[in-house]
Image 1 (spheres, rainbow, N blue to C red):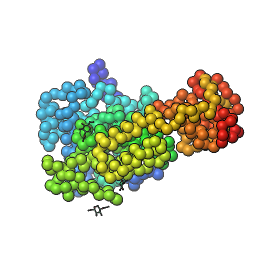
Image 2 (spheres, rainbow, N blue to C red):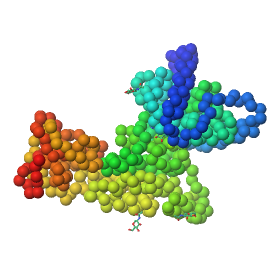
Image 3 (cartoon, protein in one colour):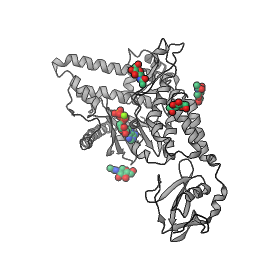
Image 4 (cartoon, rainbow, N blue to C red):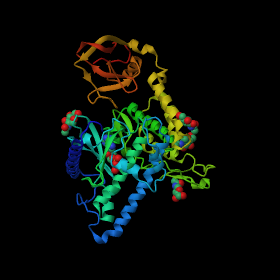
Length: 497
Ligand SMILES: Nc1ncnc2c1ncn2[C@@H]1O[C@H](COP(=O)(O)OP(=O)(O)O)[C@@H](O)[C@H]1O
Ligand SMILES: *[C@@H]1O[C@H](CO)[C@@H](O)[C@H](O)[C@H]1NC(C)=O
Ligand SMILES: *[C@@H]1O[C@H](CO)[C@@H](O)[C@H](O)[C@H]1NC(C)=O
Ligand SMILES: *[C@@H]1O[C@H](CO)[C@@H](O)[C@H](O)[C@H]1NC(C)=O
Ligand SMILES: *[C@@H]1O[C@H](CO)[C@@H](O)[C@H](O)[C@H]1NC(C)=O
Ligand SMILES: [Mg+2]
């Protein structure tokens, strides 16, 4: 780092370490105040010093061998990075590539990652970015990791992912090896793997890696690693089930775009082995994968098709064994079926627009029976999006529907008499997305309470208009962008309030 004195770097590091201690305590307080998912009795901050306990040598040996095993799993991911990535402008030294060709002998590449000295990009955050941060709340936790919402000193909100000291992974390890510090290092290897995968698998539907901080072997957190991520909202399936179809469709479309990318990623075809809604978050409504430590690019070797069975609780599938002796498309198919059983079945068919149900049914059928690959699936999803955006799925709506309404442009309403509809974008009244005033008129005609609606110029993620429907209002007020449509009195079957 040019222009930065050694002393300043040192004091920053000290401050960063202090920040970690404070954060660890904060996190543990936050966690114990919550009824934790995956919680278990822990041995927080009882760091054992290596070589302290004489008769634990066999245990230490076993722990170290596990640690080495984990490292061996990560190094191939780094190697692929060296070989394929031509677009990030990094100039690696030739000897670095030579060393990394023998992962069994040389861990220097690994050490660079764990010590945080390798920056993939110049704008990446590191330990110094965490000085003076403020912990806000725990966002979520799982068997392995805990995620905390923090504000950095500049006010920027980020999510920090750390080892879950009270998670099942740590608990099991400490029970087996009686070495909290060694275990933190072992569990941290999952965070290391995630850092590497996040660097390798950059995509709009994968959470953005902002940086990381590794305290290093001598650090206060004892090998603990902190991943700095863009902040999201944990996916709430229950909430999503009550959302408009348009938002549920977005989650499924984003998932399919992600799976399309994963099927031909820089690492090969990647399967998500722990495929659950809780491994995803949303960022401004977009779905993003956040838990990658169970992502695998491994191919399944086979001799016959019978070696290539995909097992699910209610369904088994067999994929072909290729001439090269690997199960063809197994990872892609596993992902598609999981998308079907965890996402599509809950989110997609329910309240799909009538003009699109045949395509939705087609998706449900082809993914549920694994008859379509991810390309074909994505194609149908994009077609649905196109039809929905353009309003072409509404081709049977006569434009004359709006003739039953008096339109007032540049006007809004006040003193509205609201009614509720479902699923509404607003809690108080009935707010739905429409393609046009014609579709809004069609909806208003189908609601017995509806006598008027407004288009305010607000749009949803697809660009459709938000329309608010109501029974009546007391007066009109000037409002530059809005339009108010009021039902004409003499329309048959209409009753004014
Ligand atoms: N960037 C993020 N923003 C908000 N919440 C997150 C973020 N990353 C993860 N989470 C939440 O934290 C939980 C635990 O993270 P995860 O990586 O899944 O840990 P584990 O491997 O232990 O399951 C997730 O289920 C999710 O709800
Ligand atoms: C974090 O920042 C947000 C705005 O970005 C602010 O509303 C919130 O109060 C801050 N929280 C803390 C604990 O500083
Ligand atoms: C799937 O295969 C397993 C192992 O062969 C078998 O035990 C199970 O009954 C099968 N399940 C279904 C739903 O066919
Ligand atoms: C798909 O359609 C076929 C034929 O209509 C039907 O037999 C099958 O059960 C459907 N599969 C799913 C998953 O809906
Ligand atoms: C899927 O699409 C990608 C490009 O998006 C293409 O390279 C690939 O060959 C397609 N795969 C199949 C099986 O059609
Ligand atoms: Mg998880």
